[in-house]
Length: 136
Image (cartoon, rainbow, N blue to C red; front, top):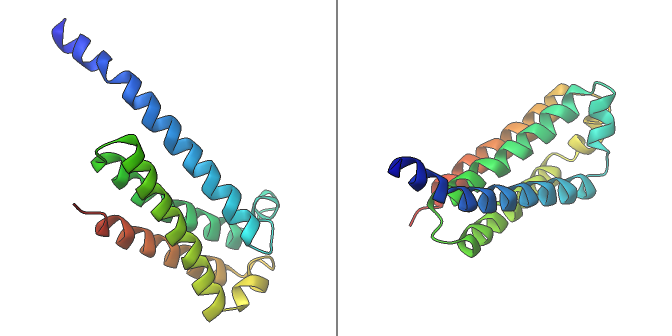
């Protein structure tokens, strides 16, 4: 019975962190789809694989460091701060790729898989590095 009670005591923290992480993910997605000149969700609904690869990579590139921030944060504000860092890094990655390979802006809406895959993989790679850098 003691183990069960101890586990139950963790539920409020789980709900708080999960809810906060969900808000951060929705915030990231809202900002990301606004800074891109094409409408990823509409393109994905239409079966555009390039848009799906691009947005999926960006999302994974954000949630990987976010999960690291959750796992090793010392408090909710600490997690929120590092979640914000992860969000900013992903937005900067998009801006950097768009600056160096401007064709992604026109290629993704046209369904050019190479553009979507490249943007998604760069975002994912940046997220993995970002998470690894979140070390105390």
